Length: 196
Image (cartoon, one colour):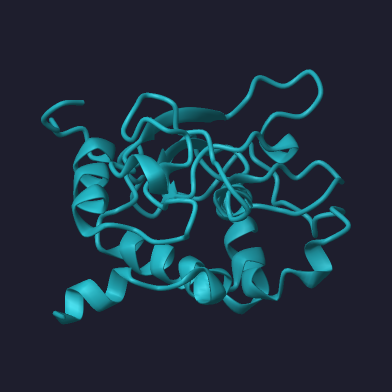
């Protein structure tokens, strides 16, 4: 078995511990498509007050955000209108991304799980990226880490203005086939994928 095959063959037992790390490392390797406006060179932020400490009840437990110095970043910007593709277990609607009276900031993208038995929805690849199975919550957790609103409820995301496109790559067993992931990365980057 090649080393690249081993990277994608983590079991459901280790899924909770490794999928976030895998998602983060893939994001650095272009699995996450981010659309941003060009940066403004060394200009002070004006007309936008610094964000205070969030009042969301679970923020105190989000040690990971403090670890990366996110409050310092929030002191200079409240985030930006950005789209992030989450390649994970699929779309599960999150109240954190579509609160009362708010337009949802998440999109049900595409299901790239090609093996029908592993897909759990019986048809393999299709335009419905809905999460299926006991691990489907994971993509919601990742999406919330990226974009949960600062609304005094639940958790806080890195960029509360971001939009999420869910792209399903993990089967109900938590495994990700390398070709499914490769095609999903292409699709998320706006490239053509045969048959999609």
